[in-house]
Image (cartoon, rainbow, N blue to C red):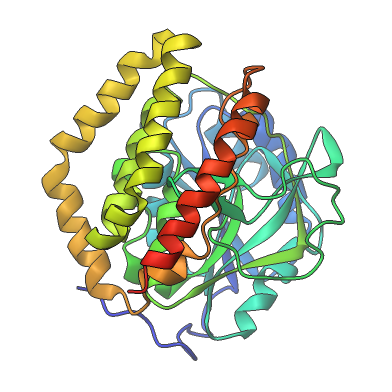
Length: 359
């Protein structure tokens, strides 16, 4: 087991302040916009592009136009999680900054993102992320975790002035966040079995349980070319990874307390799948099957998480939300009706769990 870094003085002063990491998979058109934006911020950081086998000229573009950018060539699409881990392995910065290639940044974004680390208990920070196509509206400012394990964009669609003050958040947004390098390594980085989706939620939960805080940095502004996308592969990975996150991070009595909400979520999900998106039903079954197939590995990782924990589950349960924004889950017109019907039930189930979980 890797010991967690001490609270103060964990990062060496040698090397750059930060390593800004992005994953590229045939997104040369985005790199053309992303690199000038990021490069124009400050001088004491390095940029690492982890390339997942791009064949669109990305590597040639980087070599010719941005020779100072470090490239990790993975050769094939090894997934978002593994690609970030490969880049983090060679990073020299005191802080690791993960930034999507479909973003642009404010010139002061990195300075503001690093500022909360003055508090020695802060392990992760996350930017205020605005919608690129509607820059006066929020995409997310820290992510919310629903009591069913679903990850939601916090403040989606609200005016950009919302969340003006820094505060703790249940989870960071994978689109733009920073973490102490030594903490990232001590936690084992991203869980590569996730491939993509929910990975930052799992990382945030592990950090919280290990005694660290996730903090928003609302003055760190990032614009994200965000659009809600639904598809069978996303259904598979989000559902599978949601189950894994719950199984790895919570004590068994906590999972039992959350079970009524989890079962309600399964009933709602199956209703939507069978009535509206029957083509995705196979992916739901596949998510169950993959969790069953990986059970031993999930339990091994669970033991590692539990060995590092110093916080109670209650601290995480109280940070979870009962309000499920169904429009972030599905774009079907019945979403608004579902919110009216089911959110009062989720409120009751959250209260039940909050009253029960004291460990």
